Image 1: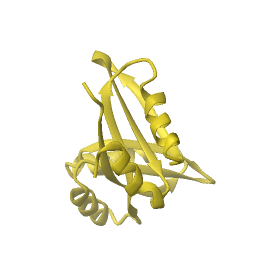
Image 2: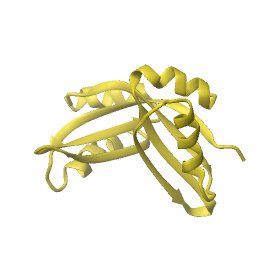
Image 3: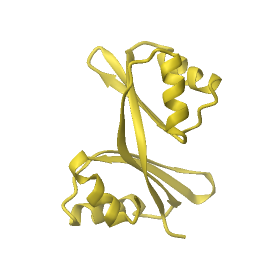
Image 4: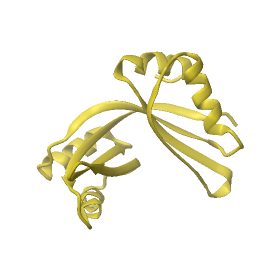
Length: 137
């Protein structure tokens, strides 16, 4: 089966870089019924950046507004799902590299039942080019 690649909107907030902050943010979304396709958190100076890729961006925005979060976005990225195989991510990055599209960041993992997933970002100027190359919009 071919990989399913879709263009997604993502948002981020910054939070104190301390224990429990990610759980607090995720529980806020859970209580609002917001489903996430992906979540990533990492340190940013003395704070932490929390990236959210919601299944329903409008629901995320509504929950974030109710929580009084200072949200950055929407920005655009890509969500990938496919059958796990040796070199799956290498193939994806090779296609982008051959088209001179630099990947700014990527997170990938394999999961049960022989599947893998990834999220990745390119420069805003390259989003349309990457989407066209990968057959998504």
